Length: 168
Image 1 (cartoon, helix red, strand yellow):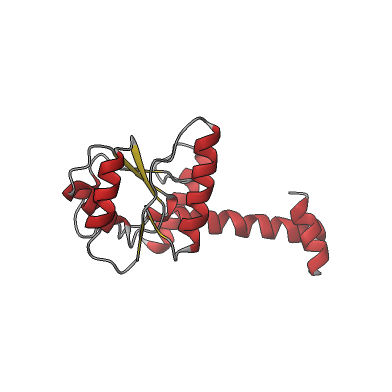
Image 2 (spheres, rainbow, N blue to C red):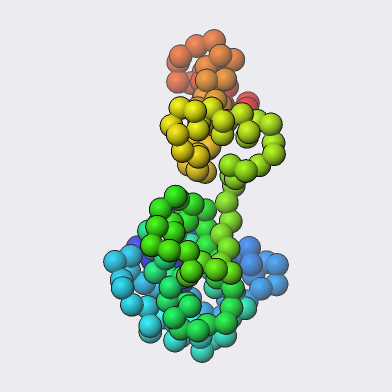
């Protein structure tokens, strides 16, 4: 289920479907909704009728509570999974109950025991007084890659930096 006007959700849903099918999975139903929707009853009934083993809901933390709430309200007995766009301190600002038993994939965890992650998290907390999220971590990594490319290129010309990035 996705907001089909959200390019991120559409691309991620397509990638998921393609990968899932290659691994032998079957997409039994796809439903769309609008980001400003307040009721997904029709979509939930269609999903419930299809009886999927999982529901994938790519999108952002702004619509995740709606989808999670509607799945619970509809008493759909399946696992709901979301995407990295759900990662936000605001995800559960209205409560966590609808997210019990729900999963979402992400590429960063502030609780990692990796020494580089621990150092980044400690420095980030010291400067901003909050834990970093995945967006902060990927921006940090991207900036480090760019700075390294400038250093290796020994130039500020875009072609030189581009070539150095390509060799990263």
